[in-house]
Image 1 (cartoon, rainbow, N blue to C red):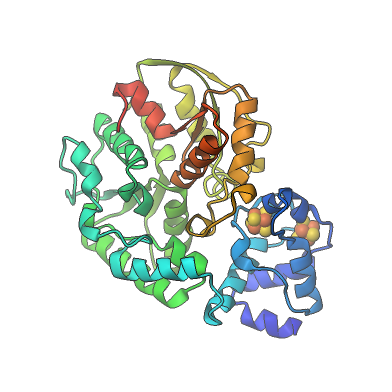
Image 2: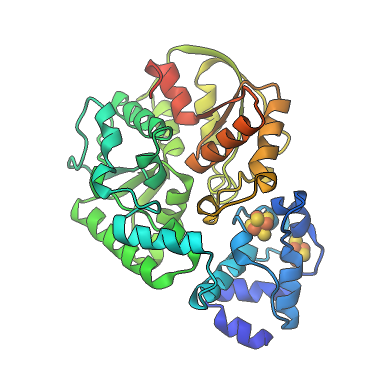
Length: 379
Ligand code: SF4
Ligand code: SF4
């Protein structure tokens, strides 16, 4: 059985890491799902069952792919890659949760997981004075599905575009022609459609001469940086916080106004633990004069997942099982008035939790903060 599971797992490096596990249990203690009274996830038991060739007894779609388990594992066991391999097997056996399979159909038909019409994807651009759609440039600002359609999150899209325009950067956006990067397809474990979607996106990018992709969402960023190269993608990929930090460091962008507020910062999993981008968002926050910044006790490598990764943003979690509730409390404990982050999924989850907890904590993206300091609020 152990041998046959290894055969089923295409990711050899991940499959071979199973044997390194010495069952210390640090991963299970670190998993955010184990702080609730809801469904538990024990990566330790999962790996043990793989070692012994026993049937695995976890739902791989519960995992938020936050990598908290891997960050504490002393043996470098590839827990999330193994869970991803299991998802592929579950997908082939029609065991993928319905909300995720429905989202895949909507991506197939409309280019986004909620089935919004593609002709309205670029409407957020109406809030800009400049026409940057399909302008000839080798730098693409890739907005992503949720920040294209969601009215609240469009404020992040316009803030980043305005900051890039202010810095005099030459860039383009795809507007109505942008399609999902494939993150939900990848996390569902659907490999055939993923290949089709990635190939179509790359054909579009290549036909426009795109060489550099600046992604708004850490989830799209991770897709372009880690998954697209498997299909031949060869782009310089940056998260927008990296790009803006570079523009500030080189003097192309300056933030002159002051904002008086107590703030803290949440490291999104797909930016922090996945890519070690910890300093750039903090440098951007520091560039705004007048802010008083405090770290939360769990920050950087130890940051607590908001609950939205691994496709979980498209699946329902019971209110009492949302890690964002705990994260919002941790932010309030610092005395912060504003919880800043740099991922649209984190914004959705934290705003929901702040509302439920009736806390006046304000949730902002780094780009919104900079734009508010640089030249006024968007929205
Ligand atoms: S990736 Fe996160 S949610 Fe998944 S098993 Fe590891 S710690 Fe738990
Ligand atoms: S932390 Fe690593 S070595 Fe320890 S039980 Fe988990 S997977 Fe095994």
